[in-house]
Image (tube, rainbow over all chains, first blue to last red; front, side, top):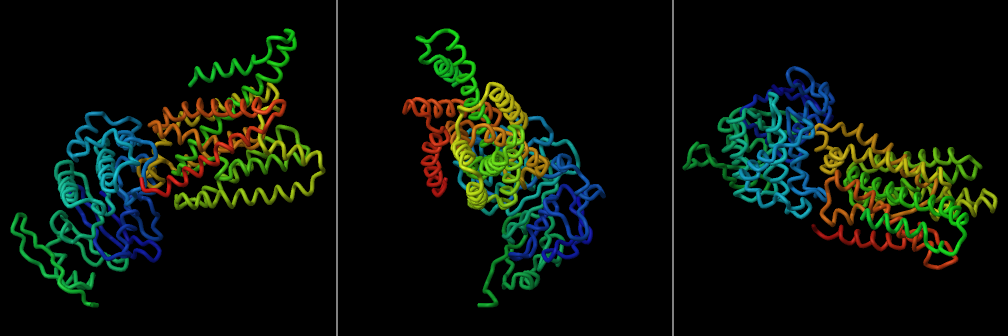
Length: 257
Length: 302
């Protein structure tokens, strides 16, 4: 299991403790600059903590060779830089670099169909829109984990919905829930939309100024008082007419206004 | 492309030899034309595959041994060695050291992977090596100054057959290495962070690439001087033709680079007889406008 102990990163994160079980969706929430992306990058092993550690199977991440780590976790970054000269299919083929075996074509086909990306298959990555690049980056991360036969597996997503339209956001978030429930993948994502976290996350982590303020199911953590304390934003919570009947968060007025 | 290269090579080897006696033809072919031909092909291939690898490594279509300053560093190293009357082997080692130093410096300055930083790093490195060269020019006596200046302009005409064969072997080693790590080059195109997340030991891979690029460019510059823009133009044109996977891109870049260098050398040799123009000037004449065109393209949204 992925966990962290007394995790600190210079002035950005302070003394974070916690575990991320597989099979559930965790949303990391907080204001801009709260340390959400830094935490995600530490979980991916991209950054080295200044104090404390992130461990997988009780071993610090930095004891693992990068190829082993790549079979346990996949990462979708906020990076829409075009990939020069490669088609979407060629980009997806790099997902299995760690296993040294190209992914089976039917595996790519299945993924592209499930994510409505089949028409993009032979398109050059540099010709895609920002939203299409984000979808391909998500598909790439999912493929990396699908082609790995180890446990546990984690999908780490940094603001995956930022460039997506409404329908694509819903599709991605529902797909993440399926991955967690059906394939026992631990999904950890940085989100800004509290309603998405409320509806799709099993657990939320609330960060403020680099500290973990609260963690637990979204219905208990995302109260009007807590949102007010962290975001300085007045909200009301209204009942949602559809299952699973988790409340809708509606902003009212800004305190500082 | 290969056929064009073969026909062109045979033509260049045998042009204007019909009326000459047999032994003179043999001397001309073996001692002048064959070394020049092999040098052109090898240097073109080396510069093109090094440019291809650098563009993946820096994740930037504007990366090129000349623009990033690697060739400038190699030129500086080699010029210093020539000024000190060093033997050819020392010149080659000095060029390699200069290329490696410049490449490592460029990579250090390009940690953000922003195109403008890489080019600015190249400007700074080229300015630095230019300044040191200017000081060197004022210190060395005239005959050496002329030989350094002429060499810096780039020419395939002054290599011996053993040197040309060495360059050929170098091109095979450098091209072979890049072909072997074609998948890693594809992964590097996704950016250093994503490449690490995919399991690539990014630091080690980049160190190796730096070494191989420095070997290739150092060797090429030490023997033929500065021949610019081949590493920029070739991979870019091939990518435009839809060839992006490095398993195809590396061998095709080698062939196209060889063809381009040979074509540039033919123009240099036969455009204004009996003058033999510097081939570096020919490639820059074609390459500089091409670079400006690319800069313009980069400013447009994809």
